[in-house]
Image (cartoon, rainbow, N blue to C red; front, top):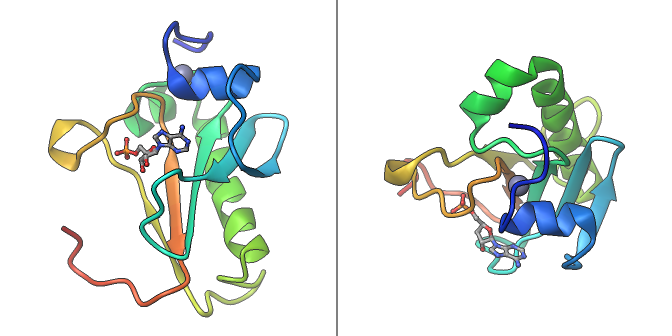
Amino acid sequence: MTEAAPDCLFCRMVAGDITPDVVAETPTTLAFRDVNPQAPTHVLVVPRTHHATIGALAAADPGLAAELLAAAQAVAVQEGLATGSAPEPGWRLVVNSGPDAGQTVHHVHLHVLGGRGLGWPPG
Ligand code: AMP
Ligand code: ZN
């Protein structure tokens, strides 16, 4: 579905009912700081329309999925984690999808993480 979902936290942010710490906006995406940051930079990038998972978004609107990815790259550049031409000092994109990955908010969101060395493999 693409209309706002009742009781969806990120739809409420997009609608302006809850005001997150916004760092970037496009006509189709919103980027804001995670309330419980796991790195010096931890920004969530969401589409303004509601899709539960990255898979659902990719199936329903691949163009919007590409816009979401471009918005994450723009945030990384804005946060000093990359330039337009090089991935230095570097950053990580995380998309939790479903229970085993620990997805807790069921409105697709890209985590932009950086500002410290990031361990691998992830937990
Ligand atoms: P996930 O576990 O991938 O579904 O990520 C959900 C993320 O949303 C977590 O990192 C939370 O810290 C974050 N989060 C939950 N509530 C808020 C909020 N009100 N503002 C900003 N981030 C939030
Ligand atoms: Zn939503």
